[in-house]
Image (cartoon, rainbow, N blue to C red; front, side):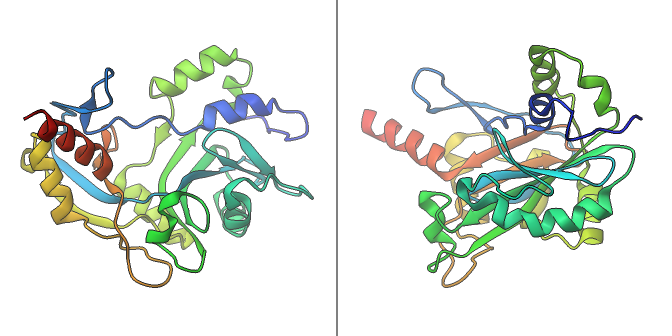
Length: 261
């Protein structure tokens, strides 16, 4: 594969091909009012449950030569060697030391993207659930590998977006993700349990109770007492199916149902 030169590459294309895709809610959202419907995502086999941390998505894009880019969910913020980086949400400051480590270790003939949740500080209104002194933390939650990224660079923006949203990115399986994190010394989002798909609640009310039982408080406080968790992310073993379940969606839905009675 030909090298990718940061000085000449189309950064808009790199940005688009490495954005994190949207994750559906476990119970489908009603487009009319944002409430949850009783229809849920179908899983088979073992399902890994991880804590959903209330922060902001950050990504480290490692190019084949070991150089790297740091980005938020929507835009690239910093390239290795930049004198000035975009300070948005403290993502660059939080992830630059990590990028220096993984940039050297992950360099190969592919393009690798590390997706991390950056939380605490002033990142979100829920930061107080993780820190009382505005500390900032990060946890790895996914890794994608693009085997032939150079081939995508000549595609029009619409084609890249369609490829990404259609599942074109190749994500590591649960076992491979944990193995990669271990080798690189990266802390992952907390694993809560692995359960059989048939044991997952299918009703909205029962899923709310399931969340309360499985993840009532965060497992990754940065200092002080642990506050409320945001919810749970559900993944199949090969990561072909993924969904999120957030307390706020279930509480809003059940409150609306109660008010109608």
